[in-house]
Length: 474
Image (cartoon, rainbow, N blue to C red; front, side, top):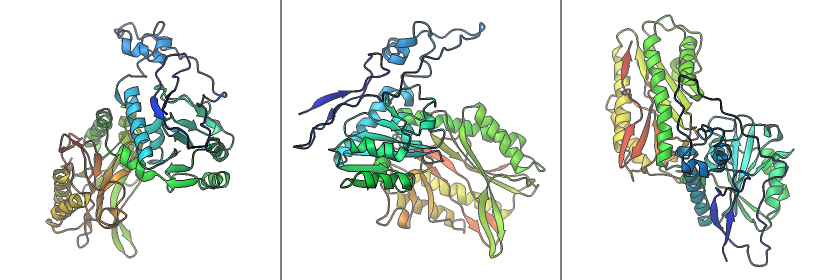
């Protein structure tokens, strides 16, 4: 027996919901009724879109495809530009949503999960699951989404987010705001008596302990399993729309570096330099910026390479300026960028560290082909760096997407070669990765660090930056 489950989109009768096959309940267990949106949630009124200035040509009205989507259908007659935030293309499209949900439902069936719980928190690298599933950008606190087998997900958020802005893409209709988040999550799952095996995405790194304990207490006899690796396998390969979204962030980082090359001078503080970089990113739509300076720290046991937030330290003519800049582009995808910059002619150890880093990244880029083992990519990188008479750490990169740290890991030992290699051990078309080796010359107390964002597409790995990986002098 197969029945069709449709989710109404927007509450106006327009059918833009996800359609899937719902598995029948186990023998002897009553099937759960179709879920309806929470009665506490009422549709929000349309927000008028201001008319463009007189000197600006008015864009054409919505296309037939745009009118077919209910938010546009409600507003198209009076607000011809209202559809623009809810684009029917790109990462916010219903086609992209359906692709992700179908992949997740297929993975759930393969691993015999009756439900998946996605944990999110307002912390870099801990909220991408909610955006992947619902296009929901968690701006504050924490929250969950629950996806039952072959059904649309339900958002479960704290009550103080009830007035928060929901995505204009309107992927999900059902939002619940329980007074106690753990209790609300437990009740949602307990109401489904046929749900026996529950996977939790982010169980070890993101989910609050008190919420987990409430689930254990409220769901005796149910199986709670860490399903984080399932999610990593699903999201590792990006769609063409996602790859285009990644390029947005890469463009912003390139413009930030353009600005650094214009203004970086001896006597400027690290903090003033970072402020300029933050400003460029904000104007171009970058979010969650993380600017770090890399330097040699004179520890009591000896100098070591380290990093930290920008300080009031003034840059000197003989300094090596190492920095790392990471941010989220307008569509929510992370990118990384780092280069080495000097003012005076660089010393020989600095030039050698720059050659080691650029050679290592080039070797990794060449080795990243579909099917290549991540351990082999790291070996190619290490060989290039060791050819310059120096060494780097045992792992040098990772995947990126809606979280800054995603699988696969580029490294050796427990990262890739052992039984704890993770969910993904080989490269594939559609992957986005950051490669950032950190060689250290102990005798000369000189470090090297650069990072490049890469994409594997049509069997070839390419840099997303227009700036070559090299030592820059300003």
